Image 1: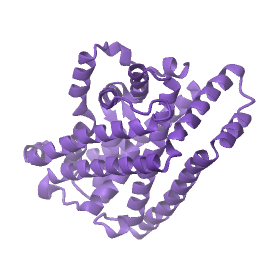
Image 2: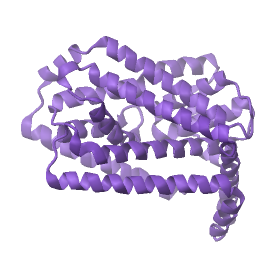
Image 3: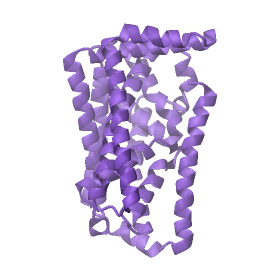
Image 4: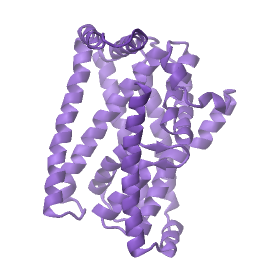
Length: 349
């Protein structure tokens, strides 16, 4: 992706977070913030539920390593699962500390430790993102379609907007799945068609695009086996089941202060899955803002309680892994400076 295009998407995401933050600030200015209620909500947390949430979150990283082992079968049929798990934990630690620039740490570390080409692991990363996108779209579409029968507070107009949005997201999911299936069954033809459409690019950019597209097509080879495809679907479903379980445990930790059932949790997760796209290094970003907005605007929870839930969810989902990632990096002899933004080095390979 060209640098200027990348910054356009970053700016768009930042603008969305800023708009949400402005709305929350307006609510804060209108009603104030009861710090006593905020502290009380944290003091009354159920620690058993929080421990369960933390365990589920760490299990999710292991499931991601298992799924990655399937994705890299075309270049290495039997990778070292320990290397994949360590790289996954370190990679997500890099995302938390460095923002989305840390995304490239994981494929780079796996390629280095498993002695496979870096572009092949970029292809695995892209395929992983496609599978996650499909499930995110499915959950988000379900959330939009079912929000009317949940405990969320909506007017007739907003109910119609959400229901219509659910259908649109379902259509987008089908299109994404169709593209993935087209690459699975007609990879050579799809590769040539993409390259033909990019022929007008400058030579340097065209060669880089050709390497990445070729690596992606090779990565799709992992889905041509029916068994491998079933494993990818199975691990993806398990991964997002664990994420839903993590979210449910966080909600239950607040007891009666956050009276959300399973349907409400899935709706909440549907919105959060897109809020996680915007990550500000060290402090998160989109997840916290979206969490507070959904809980206050849809479920009519107090701003203080919503802020507590957003804070705990961010800690469990993004911060808990950091100590483990730092320890693993230290154990493997990595200098943390090596995990600074790797995109220029990775994409130039």
